[in-house]
Amino acid sequence: MKKRVHFIVVLGIIFYSFFSFGQVNFTESSSAFQGVGFGSVAMGDLNGDGFPDVVTTGADSDGMPSTILYLNDGAGNYYPYANANFENLQRSAVALVDFDNDGDLDVIIAGVDELYFDFPTRVYLNKSELGYLGFESVTNLGIYNPLMDVVIAFEDFDNDGYIDVILSGEDNNSSYFTTVYRNNVNGYLNNSQPMFQTITYSLDTYDNGELITYSAVYGDIAISDIDNDGDNDIIITGIKGLYPMNEPGTALFLNEFSSTGLVNFTYVPGMPFPDLIASSVTVEDVDSDGISDVFLTGISNTGDTLSLLYYNNGNYGFSTTKANAFEGMSSAAVNFADIDGDGDIDIIVSGFRTGDNPGTSVLKTDMYLNDGDGEYTMVAGTGLGGASGAGGTSMACADIDGDGDIDIIISGIKTDDGDYETTLYLNETPQTSNIISYDKSAWLIYPNPSTGVFTVNTSDNLDNSLIEVYSVVGELVYSTKVNGTTATIDLEAFANGVYTVKLNQQKTTKIVKY
Image 1 (cartoon, helix red, strand yellow):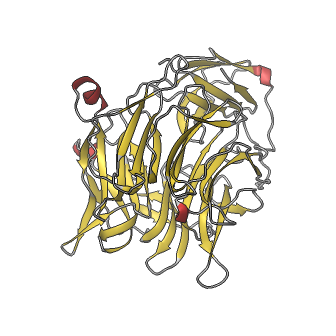
Image 2 (cartoon, helix red, strand yellow; image 1 turned 135 degrees about the vertical axis):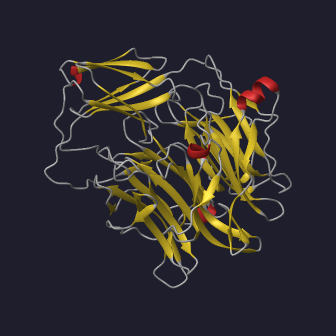
Image 3 (cartoon, helix red, strand yellow; image 1 turned 90 degrees about the vertical axis):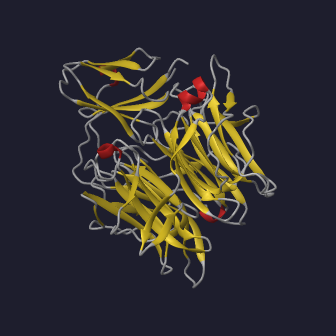
């Protein structure tokens, strides 16, 4: 498939005499999605038109399993696609990943069927081309643990350029598993081998001779290079221990690949993270120091509801030294994205906070804006509704309508009647003010469309100016520098879609679509 990349081009220097938070505002989209609970939602461009599509999975309001693909019409409107033929599952998870490195997104779904008889994991390879959207189910998967209440996480653990996967959940014998699988897609396609091979059967350690296993049941998994050694590590929160003797747990497992050449995960004792359940974990460099910070929500083993941001100081040192006035949340979905377009990472949390009366809780969605140095302030009146992970909340962020800002979709329990809902919120927040603009005619990017390689030309000499390329969720994926008045951007290694280009000397925005 020919790779097609869309750019939102942003060239800018931002001058602030002081920092202030503007009004954050979201409005509900008119697109209708089936409400799901005990499931998840994922966003990504599945049909190669450059606009994020949506896949939802979980139980509908009648308690029936459901998996639906919604296609984006290019203007941010969604309609269900009837021919995807994804298996309907509940207590499930879905992720969109390019497993076969062909430039488009594949689909992985895991959960339980209507009768609670089958606990399948399914992978559908994207075989779309020439305007045809089609998927091929993998017949020899190599994943044998049947799981529900699943968390799916993915990253390249052995640095071979292919995305590996983690599955964590509860099997049909009430045992908890967290298994890491190596991507063997070439062996599958060429030699009829299983597509995945087990790297690590479980994430565990010993405490006074007792085996302690860690799972993301009622929890979450985050993956990042925590120790900056060139390979990806795992933070997991949820249930630790063997059923029925289980309790809240949070742990860091370091990948030894960079030092040994083998993927092996080692438990790191003495981390400051609280043991949590009904929890979430998210990692991102929030203070721009080049190392990943950790955000946790959930209920501790003392019954406290927490939301904590841990700043990574290097050498396994984490602190909460900066302002940390986050509202405690449990059963929450968390996303990091640049909501106000100022170039730093904001935080969205949707879930349960403790109610004003003892034993009660309140569903809500909180928005925290980053001041640029990794300190956060909650903003009110965002227009975002509340949904709770008690109903299997999930959240995804992307620029769904091509207007240059990040929109949000949330699924879970409704705040008013306890039914399930899936709602898309359109970002109407004014993007980055107090800016000296650069004339829109002063730059050019070509060819557009492209197979992944672009040239940027500027009318002024901007030699050595930094160019950064961000995905639709605000992740930095590529950087280079201007040589005089020109630069080359090569995104052939990345998935097709919409990207934001920032040239940090001037500021203007142009949306280029094809």
